[in-house]
Length: 94
Image (cartoon, rainbow, N blue to C red; front, side, top):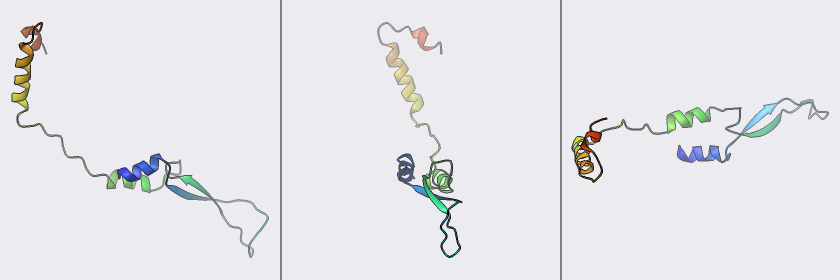
């Protein structure tokens, strides 16, 4: 998904957009449609964009709190309280 997103950003992927054109020359009575190549990220918006962004990108795991987070926070606050110029009452005002 990241590689394809990089290609989107660098405009490496193109899509052919057909639109009618008026022209004098016909091949066996048939006028061909004119094609223009546009970046996939242009207002044409192909089905590739939502497919890559929604289905190919791996789901992010739910955030977890480390099991020692409470102890680590208490140790950090105790260390800060020992620093010169830090009031212990300021630590508890939160």
